[in-house]
Image 1 (cartoon, rainbow, N blue to C red):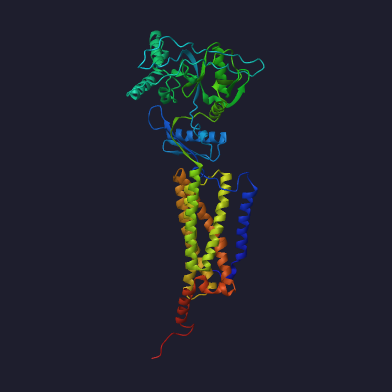
Image 2: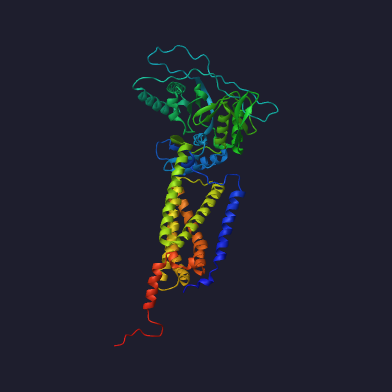
Length: 568
């Protein structure tokens, strides 16, 4: 048995809802430094989406654990370098980075492997230019070999590594023309891949070692077309033939003696003494011990800083470095030094990645998408408004008012979520909001049709409100529970933009219940008690036809205590 209408206090419900709205908009306008607007995704305000494809050394599928670890590290890099509104998700064996706004250039460097290792230099050679097939081979060696310049740290400065061991360029490698140049490049890549970590490079047999080194050096001409497919995922327990910074020299290196994971911190700074940007490294306890032991035993020998199988710097050790602090120098620009310091600071990725796709959406196209979404939402609202006014009259006005208040709640929540958790509204989210219009309107339809059922049974509008609400709310709760459950499952299983759709759909479903319980039902109860002739007229409420049916049914019923028996 439903409680009578008098037991409901509509004023309290409406006051509580007003308090919620005031509190939300006070947070919107008086907290945070951003604009009182939701954060927009790449497809609404423009931006960049970068897809990174993982590469495994053995050619198989990368382990899921390694992919998740890589995603987590890239996400830490995003937070560390201050790229706002970025989303990092896994899509199969790909990592997808989405950066809204004008920060897309930074996104393209976020997937850099930054796998740093320290190796001892066995020998080095200058890079020989690749001759054109149509011209006679050039004679003579390059004008100068890559020097190994060095500089001892100052007496008052903390211990640091010497200056860069890079040297002058020997000439850029030239590409071979011809119809079969691609086939030739593939052969060079395969040959270089098989030779660059040949164990015979450090064989105890001197003749074997020399032959392997000569062949490896000959195969590795530092042509970018050959080197790029070889970047990353070197085997740390084997020797390595690698090209130096700017491809000016190639090195034969011993197995890695110190991994980059032993770095505790990294930063960039300008070395005024040598007029260059450097990356400062601080090692962890074990790394500091290993580095100090190596530099003590290898004074006047070169140590190579190998980043993604490329020698960034190969300085000569001038003295033992025991303080756990050192530098990487490599003729960096300011931005290059900062990028390198950031990726080293936030971790080396367990896999090597290549950028398989980079999509940039212009701000103009994003604005057009936003306008299209708003137009679609406006058309949907207009259709709902026309239907409600035509079918429910004044009750339809309540529907429109409830939808407007529901939108005000959704808008404030979207703004606050954008500030607090970085939520961005994209086209999929707009689609979720548009669908939520139908879900919210459906709750009102259920309620109003229940009212009609009660009035059709002969009850007055005032007595029908509590009874109709008692029955309608069970249906509304069941309907919204199904919608929310579907949205939650979709959010849990989906990735990328589909998550935005599921999130806005689930959020709107919850706010629908808030509006129905705190606004729609109390307002209907107030109207049912009103003494106004306009509001009490069933025709103005779209209830005239059902009230007439109810009156006829009531008149046809027998009076209480008197059997309806016709005389013979």
